[in-house]
Image 1: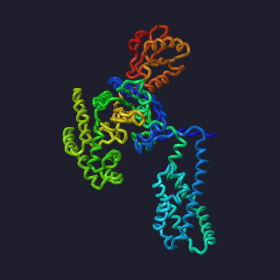
Image 2 (image 1 turned 180 degrees about the horizontal axis):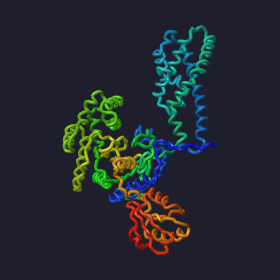
Image 3 (image 1 turned 180 degrees about the vertical axis):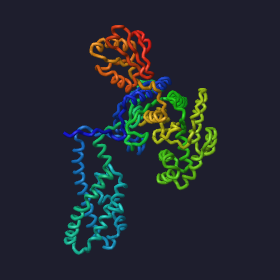
Image 4 (image 1 turned 90 degrees about the vertical axis):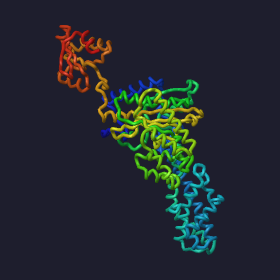
Length: 577
């Protein structure tokens, strides 16, 4: 068997010792801040039921779910089902085609039968009373009837199009039933052989893909940590007293297009509080963000703050109450595609022609937080829900000030949307300002996420740190401290087998006193052992040859300065601790 060239799946990465040391440094700081604010650790499985995940992230999010094939030869079984369904559907299409042609040929003028608009109207009338749609009724269990009818009447390659094409190619007139039935059957057979396969595959592609997916995949990799947490809360509500504060540091997976700062497998560090409506939680999230980035040495970043109720109010004032979901999806792309493209998308999503004009004043708000708040008070005056969201924002700002901690990076941004559909209140997003990178932290309040799993009216709020993007930012700015690299403190040189055996007791004593140490595993030239220690970032080399053991004093060489001193083992322990 030929050797296989190794490779990584797109959007994934290996992490060597240096990267892992730095990542653990990040995890350690974030974990310490979470615990300082009273959060407890939690883990959930990487694999969740698709029913748990789907419908929680909007249509675009659902498309990014990684689905797991069921065990066994499910594809083989589905292939057989697919072939069987294709045959049944082909028979149904042929039956409908034959009936329509036979019936129409007897009733209508030849010129009318070549008019697709005329045929569309007549087919629609028959389908409305289920005369000719009956062979398809089994497919309508999973297909919306109006969508199905639209397929039949498609202007290009729908059944009506083929029937019209049939009459255009056929020059017969209705003479006698037997003669013309024979002619019709001959043409129907030709139609079946040349066209039905195209329609069948088109219908199965258009309407049965979700049915096929559901039958071969029942599980998926988690998309985020919040929805699995909501599922956990519902299943374990009897174990916890609310409010319940948890943190979770685990990987998530998204079938996104890989690019700088965007991966298909990445870690999230989440902290959530459920079971309370208090805006104190939002204020503490702001403080946690500030403390984490202070400890990481990152000063150039912004914390954007908004409220989904403000976006609901904007939608209301745009004449589209209840359409804050599509509005958020469009506005969330503002930085990527610009205002004009956002306005264009809003029109495509059914917003009125004056939507852009009504949205524009909100997009133009700028200045200090006080200035933006004053502007929002005027613009949202006609929306009760919008004013409620603004009141919540103001209360969060007051609470943050009440801690006596200045957060200069905090800025109200009425265009902040956050694409996830479950947010209902305050939302947060953090972006670095000194490097080009997307959000490195985000979150918000969700009032009824647990309601999707049968536990209504449990409000929660949370934040998620994107560890992979934070790593990239710190790496680009050279903010990782040298001590973040965790390695052995000292390497004991191996001169020969006899001295190596004696060095084992020294190695054991160093480790017993809490000093990370190792013995080079084989006798080798000292230069090779130097190179090994330097490659791992080991700062000290301990000379432990026969003469050192004879005298009881050992050379300790600082590999960074090149300085070497002689100590007893006890003195070395004191020096290294």
